[in-house]
Amino acid sequence: MDRAEIDLLFTGTGAADWLADNEPVRAENGERRLPASLLVDGHVLIDCGPGVVEHAASLGLCPQKLTDVVYTHGHPDHFCVSELQRLACAHASRGTLLTVHAHPVLRQDIDLVEGVVFRPVLPGGSLCFGELSATALSANHQGRTRDEQPLHYVFSKGETAFLYATDGAWLSRDTWTALLQMHLDAVIWDATTGFHKDDARIFEHNSVQMVELMLGAFVRAGVLKEAHTVLLTHLARTLCPAQADLVEALAGTGIGPARDGMRLVLAHNGQ
Ligand SMILES: [Zn+2]
Ligand SMILES: [Zn+2]
Image (cartoon, rainbow, N blue to C red; front, side, top):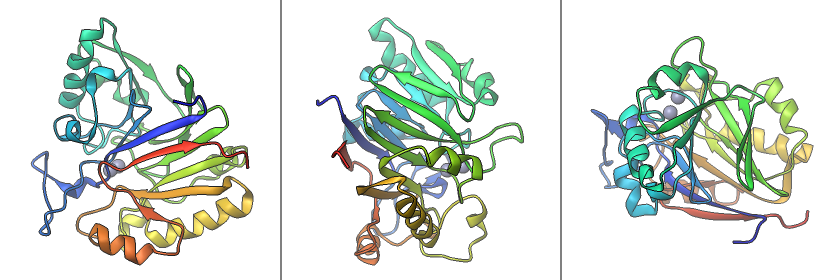
């Protein structure tokens, strides 16, 4: 792969209501979204909720190739101790420890897992995965406890960069100030409430309308490159239309709904 390219594979694009008794469920139309997670360059996994290891294998997730797991926060659709143990066991064949990056509040649970090394992450912190690196930013989202600060991440490789912003609603002033120094190729945004404007979850998740407003500000401020990609994830089963209807409803907006198994290769285009 070219040094400036970042390979993304959506190993889950659903919100918590795609789980029942900690198992992925299908919608009435047969669609399924695994808990929101993203595989970066085949070896860094962002979040891993219940069912991701088993079901995402068919989408292209190869746990043996993972080097790092990065958590946005400790809600059960993103963080699951037994799933992390499965990843660590698969990784053990490499003879090295799986590195796990998360807010310090999650350490107690991560320490229960054998075969991992824990790296604490706070807003403003830097993470390094070889050629790939990431910066953590604070997310507007309630953590599992009052002490936990959920995180967004800007991943970059050379001039290529993307923001992974779920779970969370409007960006904090601190996060926006940090983003003003960046020049992104893509944003992957929480759009939990779909086109519902008045669902109370907008206080810690986005609607499509909120994403449209933030996208406009990103473009106007030059935070996004001229040629950019904006994808929605963490889509709620009970609030969002079916994938085909979402694609149709978003036509012409410059925003697309991600789906499980979607692959995207980002490359710096010189703009
Ligand atoms: Zn969630
Ligand atoms: Zn959450």
